[in-house]
Image (cartoon, helix red, strand yellow):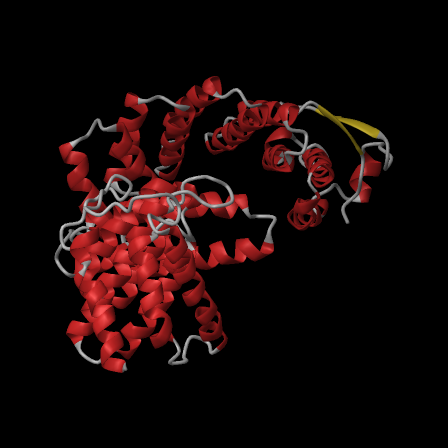
Length: 470
């Protein structure tokens, strides 16, 4: 019986020519035509026989399923399944779903490499037939070609390591079709297939970086999409960790700069490439490299967007070229329309002018940020820091050299009120600078009372209240 069934299965495998040669795949699964096109409707020409054969194999398949797909009953219903597969390909999508289980069973039982290879061919044939005859999802009516190709590519990668290039091409097309809807398994195995392609000498290391950049966008999209759904968020976080860990050996700055440096030299004005270079170097913290500088500058010149201007500004900050950074931030703020985004830029400008020791402009931009975003506690902190740093310079005696700390602490309290998450940071500053308040005897000497109003002069010009050191 075993020999007879194997002969039947191999007969199906040898019928590959009926469905199209497996060795010469058309890269576009949707357009691939087969030399065999069954006639008739859903159940083919002989609908009565098709329905009978379908019923015979399905009933037995249910029993086989109950055995966890281990019972030898599979040998009895395979001929019925094969008839439906050959003569009624549109009868039921389960013909292919179940067929993968059936052929998977025989694949595991096969003892020779030749037999295993033949079963792999058959499994791939079943995947392709499902894509051909059921390209749309039975519920939604939408194309499921990309998703089915993903399952096919993952299966091939797992059972046939020597067919890595084929699995890579299938997964690549699947992801191009699915994009943000690509399955977690498709993305993970596409990246693994990419790594294997490089290790086998079929592609250079640049492909690893390009693939990582491509699939990272899809992963990031889904992390954002499911941020309020713990179940799916956990799955996508796991995928991100898997991909990042796989990429790590190829993610050193030296490797990235070497790969992208050559590409930049060949196409220094390619906006798509420039975006890719700046994005990956920024993500992997390679921003102090000359390549990052050149790419960012070229990107800004080619496409002066707010994002490009901000990149230039931050790069100049890292290089401590604060005056140059200001120019780019001012360009960015002129292009930005969203009030909160504009507020962020104003806040950064305030910090830059602090570095330039221009306290008046630093406060001016901090105030602009607060006007657009009253919850910007960091800008209140910045103003407080400016006042504290000015204390000694804004006075000429024991009192006036200390009063700026009153104004500084006022700002820290405002920061905490604006953003409660800053409480710990703010409380430390309050504790430090409260100790720098004037002593009580100094307050009395200047004929002042705790709690009364006091105008801090110098460039500060803020009204505060009198307090003694704590």
